[in-house]
Amino acid sequence: MILASSSDFSYKSKLHQQDNLLETIFNRITLPTFVLDQNHTIVFWNHALEQLTSHNKNNMIGTQNQWMAFYASKRPTLADLIIEGGKDDAVSHFYKNKYRKSPLIEDAFEAEDFFPDIGGKGEWLSFTAASIKDENGNVIGAIETLLNISVTKQSQIALKESEERYKQLSITDNLTGLYNKRHFTERLMTELERAHRYDQHFSLCLIDLDNFKQMNDNYGHLFGDQILAEFGCIIKKNLRNSDTAYRYGGEEFVIILPGSLLDGSRVVANRIRVDLVEKIFLCDDDQNPITLTASFGITVSSSEDSKIEELIRRADKALYLAKKTGKNKVESLVTSVLSAGSP
Ligand SMILES: Nc1nc2c(ncn2[C@@H]2O[C@H](COP(=O)(O)OP(=O)(O)OP(=O)(O)O)[C@@H](O)[C@H]2O)c(=O)[nH]1
Image: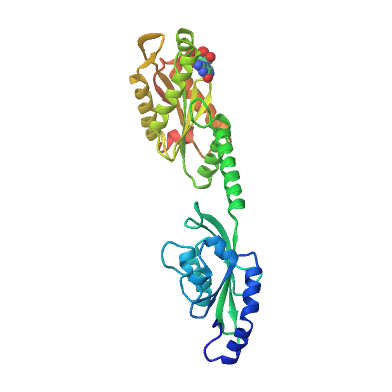
């Protein structure tokens, strides 16, 4: 084994004498470990690493094929980067957002990554690479130790996924797949704060299906549910990515349209209105085509709005007007500041 610079013969021979002892020690360590010399040649490859990577030490020691045990194509391992000087930008290039300086060992890095080619289904590994220096402080090699953290990582991922799922369920209306009223309140507060901070406006559009009670009475509650779900799809289909739609209550819906003023949100509301008018619903018990309309009340946020209730009240008044003056229409109401200004 050569671990010292060629000029440092005495140091090299000292290490040679200790080879057997070092090899025994490495092989008794349960942590997968390998050591490279300054030429990136493998000098130690312990049993634990053989088991982790299925690469036998006899095929690895004396080669520079350490990458083969971890990656599908040739590239430096963390230990190689340490030998190259352990430059932050080089480490970052290969382990972006997955590494940090070791808090325990000077000039060492630790990283965490998923290795799809290890084992049958890939493994998560946490690994640390540190330089090995001679008496004069010259780097003469590097040691990398690895730890299989797949079990911990998978349970962390599963926990995160179930938290995500739970969060999604807690803000979703299960009949329509739209967001629910609780989420609406939170989002509306955020939107109002943002509008004030950046001196922007957004629109709020309340929607109420017309004569929905008759639908339930004539065709049953289950059919009513089907209509609500399909109307949810019509709303979603007509929104931009930045718009969000919510089921506000029974047959009431609401949309927040960030960055939209009255003209823009009227266009969206009318598109939804017409799509609904043109939609033919069929009930299993009665093959007559069934149609339905909705009324819309829009308002635009203003610098005068200090509470979300003020916006909701205005949109509700506009909706009431739409209902009172014939239904199947879009009405709007804005504050005096806005009606005097641009929107
Ligand atoms: N199927 C179904 N019906 C619902 C649900 N939530 C509320 N409703 C019904 O929606 C109907 C609303 O009726 P009303 O408030 O009288 O309003 P409307 O008949 O739509 O009349 P206008 O709003 O004046 O056009 C009631 O019959 C509620 O039972 C639901 O989740 N599923």
